[in-house]
Length: 169
Image 1 (tube, rainbow, N blue to C red):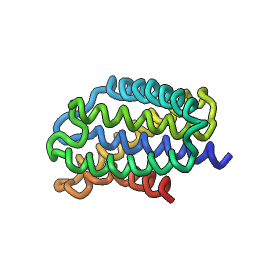
Image 2 (image 1 turned 45 degrees about the vertical axis):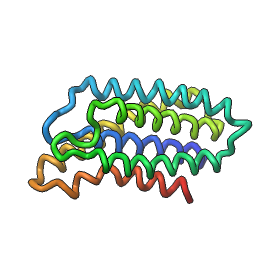
Image 3 (image 1 turned 45 degrees about the horizontal axis):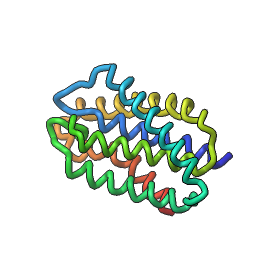
Image 4 (image 1 turned 60 degrees about the vertical axis):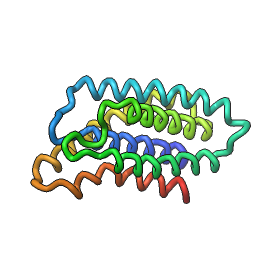
């Protein structure tokens, strides 16, 4: 039971962080962006779960957890380097999009190594989209209420930091 709760919490925090990363000061994302990101999450999370179920004989849960934790910390470094005060973290670049695809694949692989059913991906997608919207609304309110949001722009990286540290422990 604790494994399922941990997986749900991880998906929730990933959605919260991703939603916060979609906010920028100049461009307000359209509602279809949430649908596209949610569908991309479902697709690559499901593919990652399929690949992870095949790797179950070769990779242990501990190794997959360490790889996912290190990827979260590397993703924080990548996003800090790519940050633009006007356009935010996520720009429509192939490099940024491929990093998020790899992130969703690794999350699916990590959940699959825990031997959770593939049907969990439907439930995880609903949790992800809900937390994506919450993270977006939270960061949107923060960035548009404060005049100097330079340090506040780092808030979406905090859930990734918690996930990375939690997975490495």
